[in-house]
Image (cartoon, rainbow, N blue to C red; front, side, top):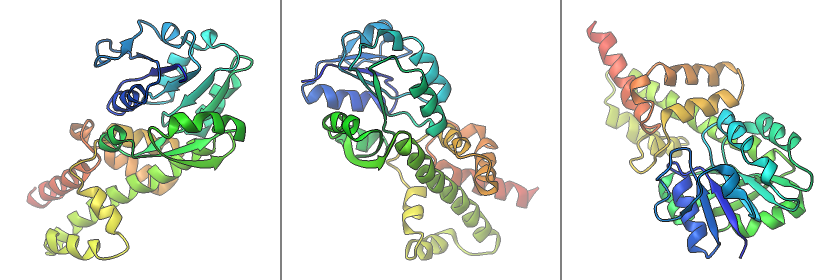
Length: 268
């Protein structure tokens, strides 16, 4: 079994790391805040964690976090090491990581779609980008975490994640506004929800009212920023940022936040 270093034990990272350990891989983990390893072998530094590893997996919050942590371990990577970055950082930041790889080290970008439950169950959707030979090496590791979709060459997994999550976040935000408008027009929210659930927006409605997802609004806003400055995605991001009280809540909280905002405007 390949020796794996797993860096980043947040909401998603810890259950993912546990799955790799349960599969029998020798595993060393590291997290910015120590004491989150949950019984897994924990290193004191990123460099210590990756020393001697065949595979390094990073699951961090944003491009700045990945760049900062990478600067603390890349010098320790031996030729032949496979680095799988599963963070949602977009293709530009991914290209920056590749440009600074030590000789003989390869990088596969493999961000995921899914929440904490699917992470624990190994039911994430993994968007993998890289050279075919590198993806072949990554496949046995990634299959413990979810369904692997090979997207193409370097950066293609990171790019597809930006596209998919941008659509999801923008649509959920727009739905929240539409439901607020419905109430202003005298349409009961449940009636609007029922009709929308029966049409092409059924998946969006299900996500907007999910009670099992755990995707913080602040990370949703971060992912929209990765998609660039298009007017619709920019507007959705501004809506999310306008409600800092729900920053750590799941994306579905934006529906209630927009409802409360509309109510306050009506009674003002």
